[in-house]
Image 1 (cartoon, rainbow, N blue to C red):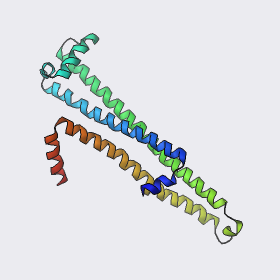
Image 2: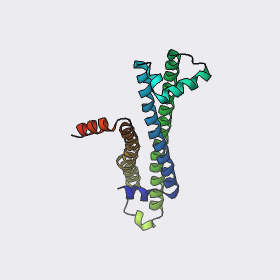
Image 3: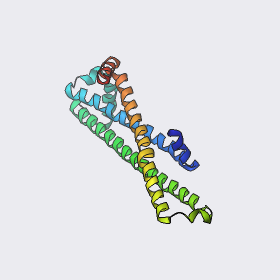
Image 4: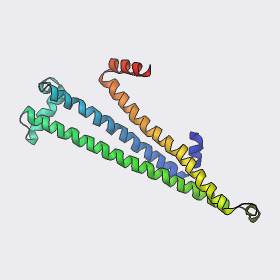
Length: 189
C-alpha cells in the first residue's frame, strides 16, 4: 500500500513528503523536549534542595544569576516560565505541522483528481459515447475521497503519531530503562 501511495505522487509531491517527514521528526523531538522539561520542574517543585544536588539544575541556577535570579523561589518561577515557553513552542510547531500535513493531503487529493480528469479528457471520442459525464465526475470525486480518506491521511497520521510515540519511548528508556521495560511489558500484556 505504501508503494502504491508513493506511485500516486508526483516528483514535487515526493519532495514535499520528505520535507513533511522532517517536520514530523522535529515535532516529535520538540514533544520529547516538552515532556522532558516537565520532569526537572516537578522535581524542583517537590524538593527545592534538588537544585544543589543535580549538576544540570545547579549549572542552570548559577547561570540564571546573570538574569537576576537570586534564590530558589525565583529560580523555580524562571524554570516554570521556561517549561511553559517550551510547551507553547512545542504545541505551536505541532499545530503548524498538522496544518502542513492536512494541506499536503488535500493538495494530493486535488492533484490526483486533476491528473485523473486529464486522463479521462485525453481519451478518444468513442470512449465517451457509452459513458455518462455525470458518472465520470462522481467517480472521480468519490474515488479520490476514498483514496485520501482511507489511504493517504491514515498513512500520514500513523507516521506522525508513530514518530512521537518512538521519541517518547526513547525518552522513557533514557530516564529509567528498567521501569520503562516493566511498564511496557505490563501494558503489552
